[in-house]
Image 1 (cartoon, one colour):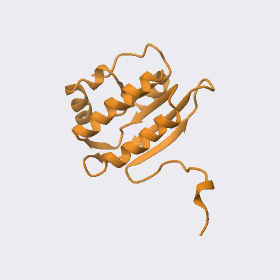
Image 2 (cartoon, helix red, strand yellow):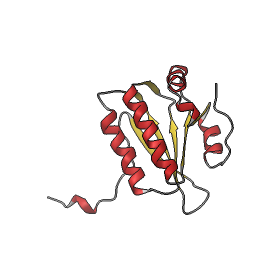
Image 3 (cartoon, one colour):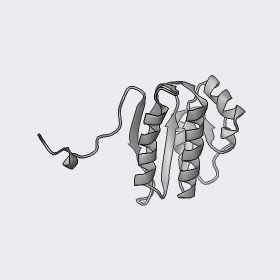
Image 4 (cartoon, helix red, strand yellow):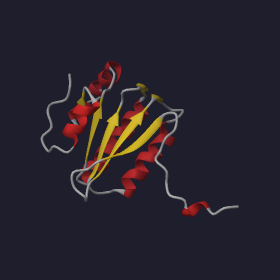
Length: 142
């Protein structure tokens, strides 16, 4: 049996979650795009959250995450709780998160619970990329 501990970690890519590196403007920054696909609910959010917590643990300072919700269909309250926790941990480490391309039903949920007061939401991934490293981002979409 081969020793798998020496294998490099591959980019995360499964049916509901894709994590890709983004170019960061400074060498001490880490930036990634996190794409959730389908539904985030009781059946999968605990497992998916482990991936995000691992990224946070590996990059506790200057982590910038762009959450691409283009193909996200549904989020339950537990997934919203995780999003809030990730926001706290990342901003505590002088990082930032933004949300891109969330469907109207997801924006409605995020607005209802006040997440959009903390995390800026943008209409497109390109717009979110432009704003990710800005200190004073434009107001969230309404």
